[in-house]
Amino acid sequence: MLDLNFVRANLGLVEEMLRARGQAPEMLLGGFRDLDQRRRDSITKAETLKAERNKLSEEVARRKRAGEDAAEVQNRTRDLKDTMEALERSAAEAEESMRSLLARVPNMLQPGVPPGRDEQSNVEVARWGSQPQFSFSAKPHWELGARLGILDLERAAKISGARFAVYWDLGARMERALASFMLDLHVKEHGYREVLPPYLVNSASLFGTGQLPKFAGDLFKCEDTDHWLIPTAEVPVTNLFRDEVLDEAELPISLTAYTPCFRSEAGAYGKDVRGIIRQHQFQKVELVKFVRPEESAAEHERLTSHAEEVLRRLELPYRKMLLCAGDTGASSAKTYDLEVWLPGQGLYREISSCSNFETYQARRANIRYRVKGKAKLEFVHTLNGSGLAVGRTWLAILENYQEEDGTVRIPEVLIPYMGGERTIRRRNSVKAIAST
RNA sequence: GGAGAGAUGGCCGAGUGGCUUAAGGCGCACGCUUGGAAAGCGUGUAUACCGCAAGGUAUCCAGGGUUCGAAUCCCUGUCUCUCCGCCA
Image (cartoon, rainbow, N blue to C red; front, side):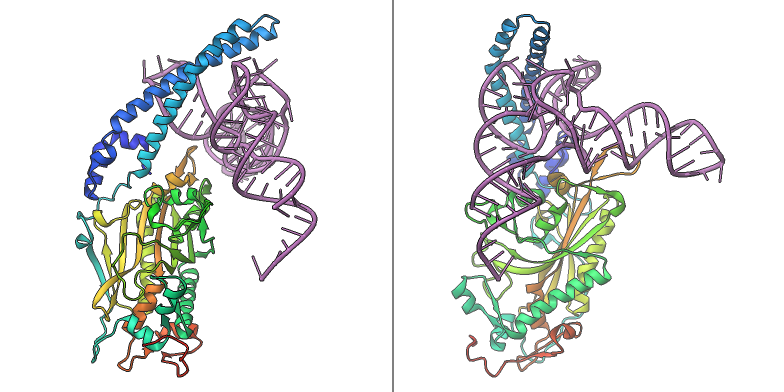
């Protein structure tokens, strides 16, 4: 959320930001000036009358202490009541309208963010690794997974529906191995603390990180309770410190969490229907940082490099993209996407998204810290990134490490996590498992 | 699920209808003191909003209500703690 005073003083800049993100400024901000004026007027009026009421009440107290009759003053105050309630109501309404307007305004963008409407305008800033060359035609992961008997989409559809997956045997084990490998790397070498948060959160948490009120349609909600399935660990982990004051000495705070993520994927009909690129449930290792404002740009680079390191150790070719204005999420001021090479499909696909939210989430979630030598509390900067999306890493390994005979080699660093297994082969006794 | 007790500023904690502009303490900041530090002493120290300012308003978990007036009384909800029950 942006600060009201900032918006009032920089309305032109805010409108420019909206245009850069491909939104019409009038839609959101058209009524801003009027609403701002109405809000101030109604607050002033209501407060003036309240001050009068308070004075009269004091007069009642004074008279009663002095043993005088206060009935006349009491009556006068009683007469103010209806007017006061009306003024209070309209002030509260204006306040609420302003609050909900501000809650829907996206974050300001950092100066280096390139212009552009959609992903076409994202800028490639780095590329790593070499794409594997095959002497045969590379297969997509859904074919490899089905033939190996480790990926079972038919039974997933039966027990849950479309966009769910069942993993068997070494497929299931590789999911677990990847999560352990990533967590170990971030905890032991990158200095993160591991947390295991709840997978259901309340709406206050979703407001704090910016999913609500605008993006309720992307989420799964439990009936008759204020519980929502998390779309990413960013939500519970960032909200750990909601309404808290952090000690400057403990910043930066770096946390990592492995959780499932649940997304309704409304509006994605017909998109990525093959394989497990886009699922209602997937697992992800998330990186979250709380930092001092002056360090956030450097910490953003560092966090992104931590996600890149996972791809490097797994020897998966990737490229690093700086998202253009139109493709940058509403809460983010600057985002890098890491895209992994998928030879089975011949394209790069997002496997990590690393964002700097500056004070946007901290203001919504009220996460502050005490600055040394300063009386006032300041908002921290929050950052997060996938380190990595485990399901997409899993399928990237299948496609990049496939052999002509349909087996899949296991990346060197993963072998210890796979109980020493080096290759995923089709099991002989896979009769019970759907395969083609 | 049942019974009871709670929720007050960065933290602890007093406060059962008006003299609360929320006592007191801790912490923090600044000053004095000191060769330097600690201790000690003194001063200051919640947030947001409205107002050019003087000043004002709101906030004691949240939302309603009673009252001339609510941190305080009533109702509902949320959360925490204790005990009982059930349970992986």
